Length: 142
Length: 479
Image (cartoon, rainbow over the protein chains, first blue to last red):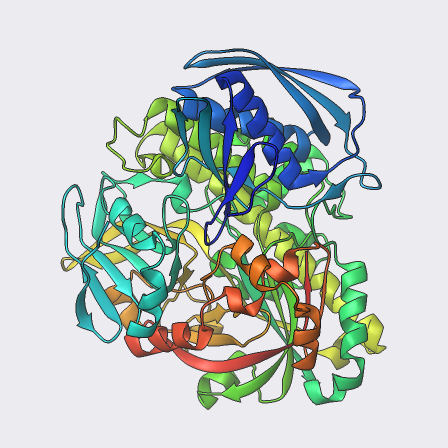
């Protein structure tokens, strides 16, 4: 498995892309998952963000929330052409998430797209609390 | 999970009904391909699909099957229109990902010296790759028209000929599309992507017909040995991806996976008879139509680029659409079940329709031959043209495979390619490739795919479709 020193490792999947991500808290897990997805999708210079996007999500459970959360980050890039450079999860429970995306406008001259992610899937999505950290598995359609 | 397979014949294997499976699984494969199939989770996915409400006869998988998300790639499942379900995951995010093959009047040998430059011209002019935007400027009203009319919209706006519509599955327009069910997010994602190829395994390939298997059908399809042909593989882009995502979320809220006792959340579905099921069908049709418009535009531009590069007229080029098929879709079709004609919702997730000779839904031009079936191989090996056969109606609800099927994950393919120049390896085989993504060639290298000749061999031997011709790649552009 490939690994990144930050917080995630790539999972082998025949047709698509998956990763396993960790975080000391559930909030950090969600922030790290967003960061992992962004790093997979795009190489962007570390710039001060120009915009903030408030995110308020409801889900059936933490896994559902995670898929919706990453789907938001994906949409803001694919649809609104805003690259998320940082996320801040303000609060999270089993069914609700409040967060902020810090974004910059997508600039093809400055931002190299590494991988086109079509969607965040529910397939084998899993969040577990281990002794020292939270861990999540998620698979993307590429 | 150790899944028992019972051999029915050299090409068909049964997974007996166990546990919560409502029907058995039916795998179209051979001993050789099964070795790889057993290495991933695709057989488990066939069993999972078999648990879905209203599934009819079998949960099936074609010989290019591999691990997907929810449904296996290569999965086919039919649901009763009255008491069955429709599942966005059984169609896929890339709704109406599909392909089309164009014939020309040219001999490939005459183009040998210019093939590399043709590839370069296409790479320069066809919007390809990550983040690419098309030059088709759509108003919101236009986007809705595309969603309803599909390829017909493209023809009306000068892309291609009216006769092309006869050679597209469903004439390039799926009925029942309703743009009012499409979210603002899907519209935004798709507004500037019409006329773009995409990335990943999407491609535009220049080919030569190197083998004719069935002279009569090849003649009817307009194919001859040594002919220069062009193959396009693309889908509904962000528009379709978002439509699928939107409905998965809504179905998850309304019909949670637990409540339907689904073993995989990605199998979320809604009763076909429900308002939500019907709305998803309408949204899916919008995306299907967008994809057909997309491929129609790409075909038109490809013709223009090649004619300009070769300095010849359209008449001299003689490009014609042979056929266009979708391989991620759910269709309402009439099939015989227990001796009675029934309306079924056929989900083909990485699978192709293969209607036989005489089928009323085929255009007049192909009524005698059966439907052309297009099977792309990987970029280093052959693609195939087949014709749908009657056995497909009996055994697979008129379905067959869609491609070679992956055997390696993308990360494994990248690792295996270390120290190798895939670009040079292909050039050594006489195939000129240009791609935008740094990792695309490595992820899509030939070793990452099954042997397509084995896959097509199973299809032919099983009688789902019969081989007509084989095409060899000469040049490819990828995202």
